[in-house]
Length: 77
Image (spheres, rainbow, N blue to C red):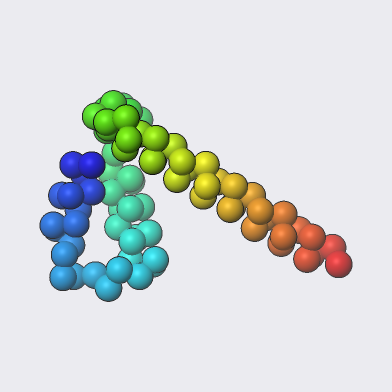
């Protein structure tokens, strides 16, 4: 993905690659984009990139729900 390549070049050598660093970079970039710009980025993805993007979204969403479920079960025990 062109955006990832640009971000990597911009921050190469400046970040440790920790999850916190990567989250901060992603959130900072997403704050600057509106709905239309996000959709344009998705339209530029090839089929493999789009499938990866959707897979990643599904996996991370399921992880989040499982964590919430675990937290709520722990809370009530």
